[in-house]
Length: 203
Image (cartoon, rainbow, N blue to C red; front, side):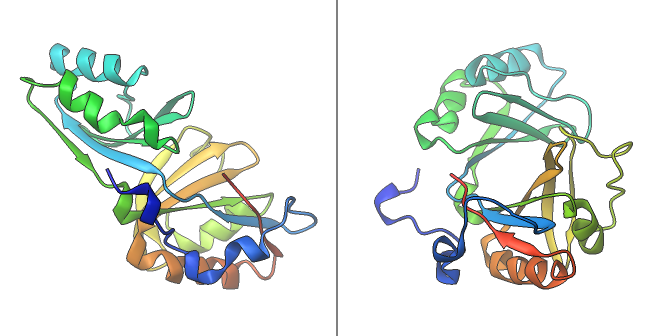
């Protein structure tokens, strides 16, 4: 686990705290960095009852088994990445899901890897959020195809990432490598100008 005393968000150099406001106002899109997400990459065989039961017991939530879906309980979300791979995401570093999974899955064929320090999470929300993201990725984001609880890996502008719709507003969490975070932020601000973009604060 990273030393929390020296953590710096992926977008700290943009001074977003100084630009952030409490509400979106009349802007069609709101952007926010959601820093310091703890992300654990979990791999295992969902058909192995020992793996599935142990993992779900350690996390306190069910792993999603339907492709491109997510499950959430409390502050923890499990995102389906592939038939044998999930991300476990939480804003609470004290949860230490990696340590609990390693302990619980000891002796079970599984892999637990912490990847949160390599990723940035940007939230895109507001009534024109779907229109903005339609410029960035080839996914069909119509509500009939992509609704709250849906997630998918895709291109986001020229960055590879993971998109997760969190609410009907709509609101989306975009996960990209830290090295692409500033590029994607500037791209979103520029592409969203026609809708109006507000930088808002998030925990």
